[in-house]
Amino acid sequence: MGDALARLGMRPAEYAILHQLAEAGPVSQQALGRALRIHPSNLVGLIDELEAGELVTRRRDPEDRRRYLLELTAKGGRRLGQAEQATMEAERELLSPLTRTERERLHELLGRLAGHSCAPRDRCGKG
Image 1 (cartoon, helix red, strand yellow):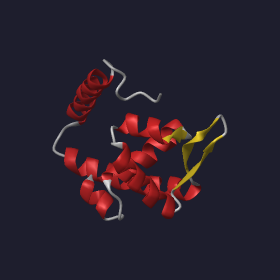
Image 2 (tube, rainbow, N blue to C red):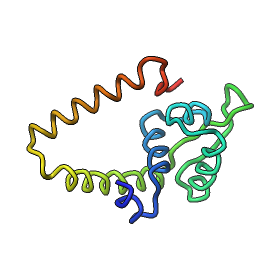
Image 3 (cartoon, helix red, strand yellow):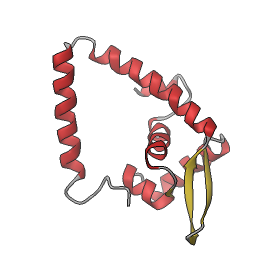
Image 4 (cartoon, one colour):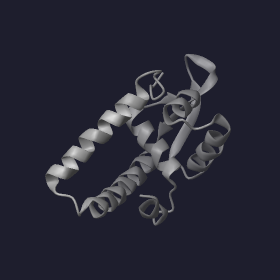
């Protein structure tokens, strides 16, 4: 996945941010950092780069003027689409030795692991 994204000039953390914004809609920088488990000091630099590339916008939250909401731009959505296509191709290549049944089983097991690691303390929540 990292190589596929690198060919697009994108890092995995940037992909994760764009993907999360597409899924969650406008979200505070703090909530985004919690959901992705990115330290606030690291997140600021990533957001600055994505904003400079016109992939995300940062605007004041009308309900709380002290915080910013991050939102995916149309250009960011197109870039995310390119990245998703590249990662799907990389995944197909990686999983090609497995049968369809094995791939489905792997997906199921990984989903259970992700659910287990995120559920206990809402570490992956959107709040």
